[in-house]
Image (cartoon, rainbow, N blue to C red; front, side):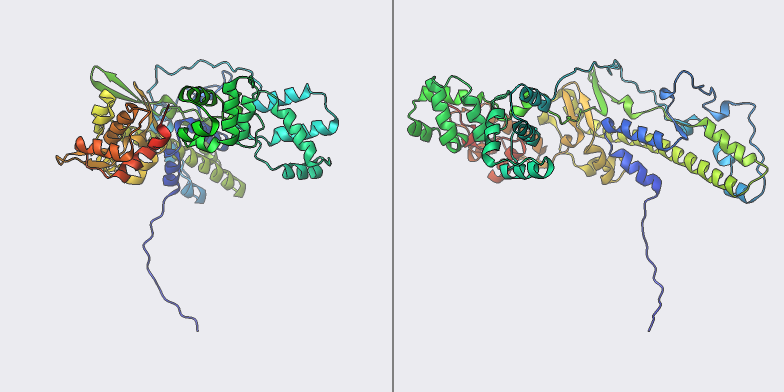
Length: 491
């Protein structure tokens, strides 16, 4: 039996404009230009005056209210006029509604074109060396397969059997494992040394065997790498002295020789993967004790609604005959105009939110930005900034997780200024950044022959009034990528 009932629900949904703003807010400056270009290509009603060519006429009336002879056209009372009112677009608008012009240029920004250096990539260099070796057609194909299987670090981590299968199915070349291993030895003789190794041990061994193997220090280094690498990485120097038969001075020379090797030979050339360039979203300068905050000019592009599309909409509205095709044309133009307006509003709202958030962070950490002393950094969480600017915590999080600020002492991710509070013996709350700075100083000044253990570091902090558990010290040390005391030991 069918039962029907009524039920009320309270739902909260984001509008398309809010979704667009959220997506734009979390886009960093380096990717904003790409996002704007995508929008310009997708929406012909949106224009960037800086991209217009000299042949394209620029309308001198960017602001409609500057046109003294302009009169709002009479709208005919029919179905189409009721649905699409041209007055919504041409009446009571100003420059700010039609552009994102923003006078916040950065004098330090280099606008010159950077010359591009023509360099061969890591794989191209190996291929050039392969071309110089006299090989049969089959061996040449195997060599290309090996080079193509290397990762960006220069290692061959793909199993030999898998490469044999690839050669059989894709190249129709049948080879044995011995053939591949023979070609692998040839490629391992290429530059840079250590290339095409299957693991770290083989990589270091290949580099050492390129040197003078008659040198006793090189011989001992090869013995350690090939037979005692685990003890070396764990810094069990006492065991190494007994196993290899070294005294203290010889061990120092052998360790220094191994440390000079390159564990990632692929990095010695141009790596194919492109590193993401960090472009700061904000700049903070110190003017005689007064901090000045500016927004990167790339965050304020000059966008405006296309004048030709607005004239087109005006023309369609005045048309005497309005059939189905005309209605579809009006709908299309209206949609593009709406989309352009929403995008410009989202860009402006993004600018305002970025400045508002960064300004609150700057004033909250004013002493730190003046002195660059991490010990003066105040405890600060997302809620502190959200309460100051009257926005949601998620909005502050989107800004902090993807934006950078350039100061006179470096460029930093905004997220790095947020920290937890720690209470001292005097009841004063300090940032855990202050504790990390003390730990960093203690470890930096320690005797490397007898590095400080976590228990000793805990005692030092307690002597300075920071009552912190040993596991907390270990957690902070790991967050700063500092190894344990045993691995910090030096000869």
